[in-house]
Amino acid sequence: MKKLSIALLAFFMAFAGHTQEKIAVIPEPVSLVAGTGTFTLPGKVTIGIPAKADLGHTIGLLQSKIELTGATVQKQEGSATATINLILNKSRDTKIGDEGYTLSVTANSVNIKANKPAGLFYGVQTFLQLLPPQIESKEKVSGIAWQAPVVEITDYPRVGWRGLMLDVSRHFFTVAEVKQYIDDMSRFKYNMFHFHLTDDEGWRLQIKSLPKLTEVGAWRIDRTGLFNTFSPAEPGEKKSYGGYYTQEDIKDLVQYAKERFINILPEIDVPGHSLAAIASYPELSCTEGADKYQVRFGQPIMDWSHGAPPIAMIDNTLCPANEKVYGFMDKVMTEVAQLFPFPYIHVGGDEAPHNFWEKSPQVQALMKKEQLTTIPQVQAYFEKRLEKIVNSKGKKLMGWDEILEGGISPTAALMSWRGEKYGIEASQSKHYVVMSPTQYAYIDYMQGDVSTEVPIYASLRLSKAYEFNPIPQGANAAYILGGQANLWTENVYTMRQAEYMTWPRGLAIAESVWSPADKKNWKNFAAKTEQFFKRFDEAEIKYSPAIYDPAISVQKNGTAYYVTLTPEIEGLDIYTSFDNSAPDRFYPKYTAPLLIPKDAQLLRIVTYRGKQQTGRQMSVKVEDLKKRVK
Image (cartoon, rainbow, N blue to C red; front, side, top):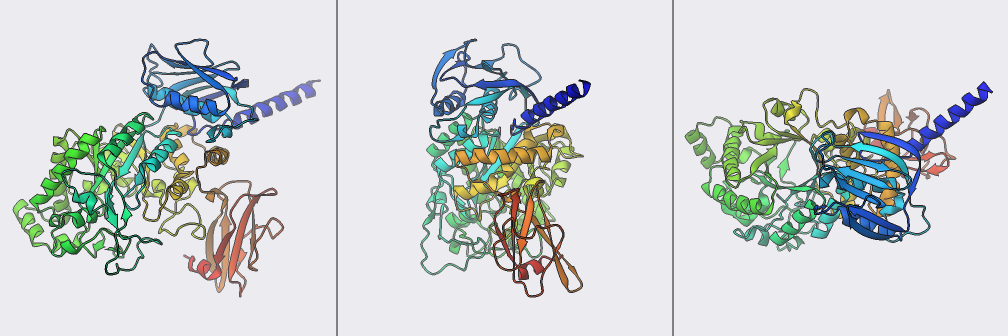
């Protein structure tokens, strides 16, 4: 009898553990306690809402999702008997802060409580994740048991700044597409949309006092292929590709984001990355012949072979010694400040080449006049004057970490992209910092093997992105605003590809900036990510399945080459072939490094979980494999 009781106890414990494993919430909440049983969404749903509260898109989101199930929805103020109650606390819960919430799902009702409307929005997003994946569908779905597990959740963010950056300069995205991106990021409690509006490849923001910025700077030659490899322009090639956002578009986007509790950080990237501005107003350059410049369309313009800063083939920098530049920036910042209510304006400051400044008589005269001895000091001079302009508009300046060189004012904030070092240093000197290091947060990098991805010079696997810590060791946490991921779009032509590059790495960053550090667990996160693939399928959001593709490395021993295949997640079997055919689970299973046969030309790889194919068929030429030897 005792043995039977122990066996039953073990069974129920295992069952309880299995039940809790199925509750997949991203980002992981601070506290999640699974109960017994389920809540079933009835055919008639009443949503209780707080009186006279601006809840933004929260009610619209919840109502639209519930109506997809076929249920009818009724809203009423302050109903304790409602099916789903949204409650603003009368007495502040100091534990959850302004963005936190508590979510209680019982067999009969759902209660979401928060101090502020943002918390209710995030609580609703979590509740929707507890429902079946079909809740993400764009169409009505029938035949589904609309159930959520009984659970008690207490949740609040680790950091205040949780961002994604979208570069709309390299490739233009419509207002509708930007809204779609904002909607997608709001699912995972992001609250900052960094809008990279200007660069060498296009000026995307209407400045009414400077009309040529969009008449000229928003348009370029239309080329398709691998960016930075395009041949020179042909005589008379039309500048038909591009677009820009009117000021009414921006007001619309700002309001749209606000309703989803997302701020928009505008970026005007200067003094480098300014070719679109110079093509519009050549007098902003230090260099003769700038009147012949045109908006970059993807041809090489920088030589990075000597490291940073790059050597410019054409001068894409605003002239720091030209007073017209500061008048120009005053006009730009006046209108930017009026359009974007967020306190910061991002002014770039990255990758400004030195070679044209070094040989410019104007810059040399400026250096003599201001007693500057280095080119970084010249850029610091520019940044300090620019900051005064930004401050005069009632805004604060933020820039990439290069602005730290030569000294910045105490009020300037830094976005640390060249690793964590500069962010740590800036926080120690009491500058506010957003961590965005390339090795964890640059989601334009390849997320799988080059055989499956658009070829980029660097890689960032999902597991590496998940290691992101927005408050790295050695940083002064009081000055870390938070963290974000950046999507540069040189090789991202469409919103579908932008989705592919963002997800699921955007899930890893979301959990890194929201969830407590001690709640992060790669194995659990990977399992949740697989469940969320079903949600992305229902939502028709494109994502990368690279998590199923092994990493490939090659070693050489004498004249022999060996291929090592390393899966990113557990439970996968890898099958391969060197005979040019497509392997399946009946081919040899990978168990040890593979010796490349003498005359083989192609390695093909596929992964399975049991009898189900999970990974993509990967095909890699042997000649390319041999080049991978370190």
